[in-house]
Image 1 (tube, one colour):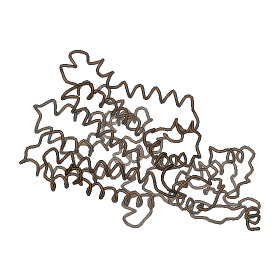
Image 2 (image 1 turned 90 degrees about the horizontal axis):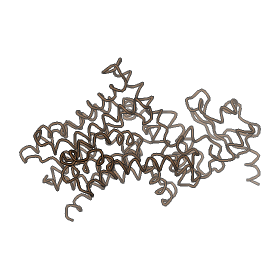
Image 3 (image 1 turned 135 degrees about the vertical axis):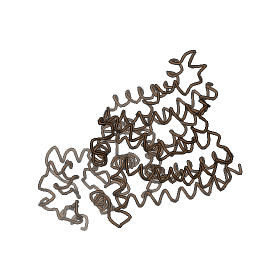
Image 4 (image 1 turned 90 degrees about the vertical axis):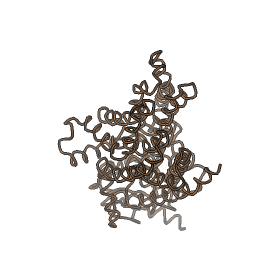
Length: 496
């Protein structure tokens, strides 16, 4: 119990730091597009503005439902996605500190190791990205530990733990689904050799059953409730396109000449750079296969998942798989015995891993690195995102605002809630497009020449709205990208 209390200060520090990072990232536009879409969708669902079909068919299910529930019970204006991500981050920091203390490290050494792992650049990126990546980190940690337990005992509790952890990985993030798919055939190497000799296929199927059953059940529910849920919450082409473009600029021609192999090699290199403690510690115990196999299966699952992401185009940026690096580092530190005289070296390897993670982040996500550098210099990262947040703030206190939030989900984040917005999933929006007529008190449209404007549904139906407005409407707010119009007739009636 004393060790649990000792972990509370570091958990509290991690919580406050995570909230500060998230707030700064939102202001300067560092949040990935996929994360912004998930944040806005969860807020919208928590406000009761989405149908039950869209909610139950939403993916990734675990972070979406958790964020929706938290937003439903929290006061208005609470940044629930950031709060949830910070809470998970704090719990992980506390758990890791406790695990390192249990493994025999002193308070000082465990504290330094926890800070180096918890504030690893790749993990900080996950905190900024929101609840989905933090849930992925959580279940990856549970999965890695469960692999070591499975290798040691292979009893029913260990088998169930691996199966449930794999299920959590699959439903926490699109890249988690790729990691789960990649891990299934590799599980045979994590099982005790005596069980492999008996019935390897049956045991692997048992381990994978919860995930397979969960995927089948989700597919069935999504088929019954097609709605907008799947399309809106699980789109990943944006992150995939960013990866492809940035990787081509960084390494012209690629490493292996094939995009899929390039992704696998890139993730493998970053894992080695960002978690050198795993490579060295495994070298210390290279004769003890029971300590090597789980870590090897864990790392290979992340590498193969990156290949799956490129081949299928379904799981988003392969670079997200590198989040396994700090998780692998803490698992190796707590599960592989490290001699007392090597603990100082292990701490130095964690420092090198932190530096390698910073370099690796520049490799797998150069766009985010560039935006972060610009933010440090006082420049905004994504101006259109900043403008959408500003529009959302301008709509606060105004109801019945017609705006395409599916195209610009950051508007919901800037407003803080979805109540009072006429969303694309609602009847007023559909009728406005169907009859080419706007009766809403307020309407917001982006500049047709902007990236957001090109995909805006209102711009497609009313191509001159941004420049010429509508009869009886006047501009009450505008920035570099958006204009917010108000119906003067309705405002006059309200004033009377």
